[in-house]
Image (cartoon, rainbow, N blue to C red; front, top):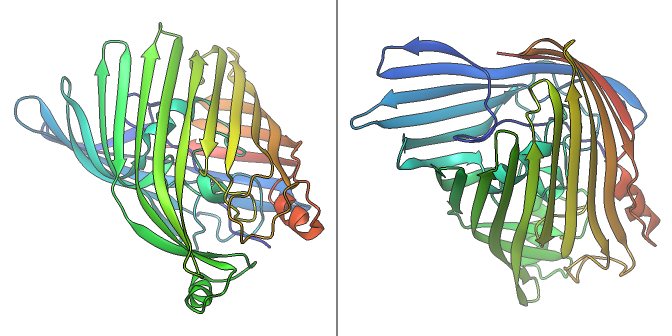
Length: 402
């Protein structure tokens, strides 16, 4: 089964990494900047070689000066696909499947004050991303063990840990501490079925008919928090948590309440974009927070990401990353799924990267992935489906940042 691919890494606000932008307008009250990048690559994986889009996007950042040192702000960001449709699969798709040339990635409005902080409302990076973003610098195979891009490498919109939908978020700095608090205010229902390649409408019909393979999921609001401490100009330590709740309604009338929980910590040394040594690592424990590669909810798992890099004074940067997302065996919570208790889910891989920086915003890159995953199952068809989106690969590309 093939799916269209895009990948995504961007930055947060207040104290996440800064993004390049070009100021288009400034009248001392209103300011408009445009940012983003165009990225295209040649990738070889899953036995195919193809030219694909590399998470290209464009954003517009609006700021308006108000009274008493208050500012109004807004940001709109769209993903763009400058190379046309692509159907090759490689790990870390990160983004909902999109057929359009232009599609929504971020969009929020808010107010901010140097003393009182920042309050924003809309689709934006979740508080959890403040904890784990520092290992997310590979251009092709970003980390997929930190619990950001949930529900089989989507964009984290559902439970608010990635580019969360319908987020109310507060950020502020207190000396060396940075705090983020958020609430994802939503109530949404969807249907799932233990059947491959079925539409949601067809799954809903099965649920209405009382078919035992169908479930209705009622997903409620989520809440998150993150705290970062800057020990000095190189060392930072972060911790955070994100919690939600959803109810599973089975076709026979049974119900089950499930807690969606992730918590963990990270450590970062240095600056990935500056010359010299850089190191980052994060670890998390999660429950009912993600799915395996065929859509089955994972009861509990541990995720670890590590990235180390060195930027030389000749404009060359190399890095090595390691990711492991280990759910062990007997990890499937939903009893209606056809899962053997001995099924094993362990996503594990390393990435080596070589970047040549013509300047700070123009990069030629080569990245290679080696996969060590274990998706053992007595059901060999399911095992093959699980392994389909995880493979060795190599890519060469060009990134042009505004």
